[in-house]
Length: 493
Image (cartoon, rainbow, N blue to C red; front, side):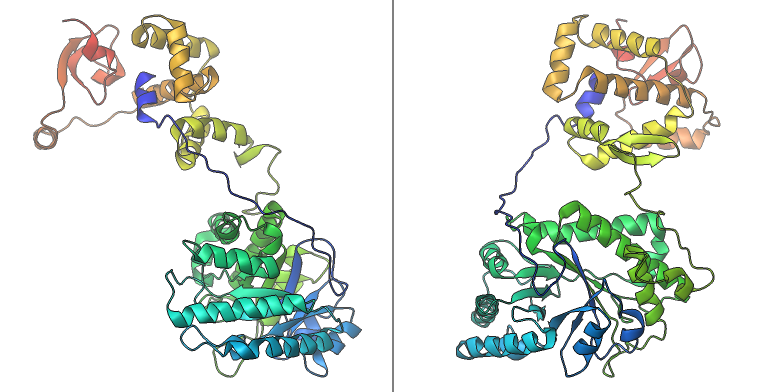
């Protein structure tokens, strides 16, 4: 046991994030009070827009125009405004616009969005902030660009609009950049775009891909919540374009539909966990200037809607034969209460992970150890009597027979007797499994290689009864320090 404790870290540093007050934001323009808002890009460039998105319960972002928003609303669809070219107002990091013209531009944008949305306090998506990941100190032009963006957000907010600032890259939040993000979040939602390669996710399969998606979505949110920005000011944008960062040529169609489904389910899970404000979908349009043509986009959009709410579209029917319509594969919302994961009917509890993490100092190490335990428990049964006998042996050999000293050592290491017995059980199972394994006798060449590679490894000739596994099942032999128990080298000659 002492060897196990020495091999693990004894402390786990914990840090708390500052939190801004999370005041509830009143719903605007008749949009749902509940979070998140699921908003689909559905401008005139989306050829199938009315066939897939025109049903109550869907929110669509459009660029306005005389007919598209009105047509959606006739179908019972709620609309918000999408400003496709933020740069036309604020400029770029290398060529910022004149700051003096931004207040008037903001007023015009609000008026345009209000008319398109039929709402005097419109929701406005701003596509998109350039250079979100630029480190500080900023160049003079980038600083002016960021100030322009902040001015626009404040002006839109002053006019009663609710801006949503889309971010094309992961943000840099260090140094003075953190202050800029906090200032932006006071008057705007922040919506990072989190895109994936369709072929890469397809190769991972539903379990690994779903985990990759959830981790990435959580990271995109916690980048900001760690600054004290409330999750009610944060959204996510998912990409379903045909270019890299989207489908990227993935075939057949049913494989892409599965990837779309996994993204929707992962976003739904993370939105529920973290309480974010919005989830946006992008990539449904077809533009002449890029490779966005995809005759299967309508089916993919239907699958996306179905995956988050089966009443919105018949995804399996649109996807066709061969599509995996499971909404459970790779998902964690079906886990038993308090379970971190399951293997068959067995489970690893969150409490067990937390307890072992305190000892190991690394959550991944704790999870790996508990998973190994789950597997080995099917192979070898350890009784309570076995555990208590092993514990007595540890107290006797390592702590002079003083149980109080043993318990104090556990407390210093951040472990309880229950956790320690779990580790002892792991050691006992491993020893019993190892004792059943047989290896071929090493050749002279292999022995020479071993001696040449590990010339300083301590070795001790011993005679032991009964024959232990660490002497190859023999009563007499050479004990290697890396294999034999510490007591074999501590025993008197």
